[in-house]
Image (tube, rainbow, N blue to C red; front, side):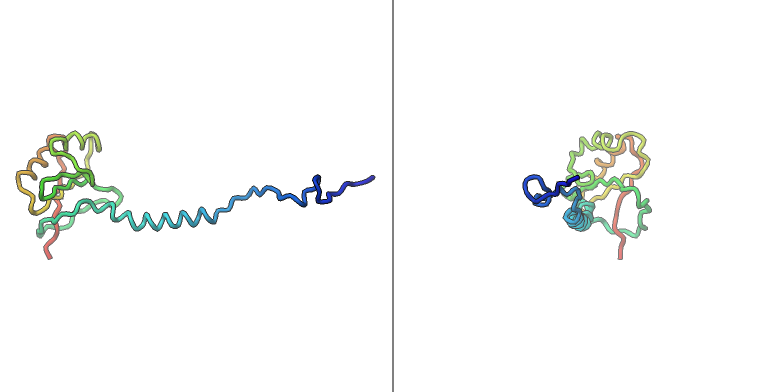
Length: 145
């Protein structure tokens, strides 16, 4: 009984590289760590919203649930209105709110108005919110020092 041993030539496996079925996850982990750091740095910048100067009052802080992100409407001093970070026209504010949050929204809507915003524009925005059927509206201010 004879045995044929591979000689490293055409028929043997010593000369050729065999396929490696293992996945090298080190580059994947490196990329994921870099992405994690990038998103940790940029996420607080995205939540900030429009830069306005809020009026200062003696009111206390608003009690919110940390798990629920509040819906904020921002009114700049030039009359521009934003839902979160998206600019909208005052006339289309009601339909936009209904499209975003739908019926039966029971959480408060926070209105952030610049202290230089004319009263008429503030009331126009408030009336659009009320006409859309949302009654829980809170006005956001800063505390006096």
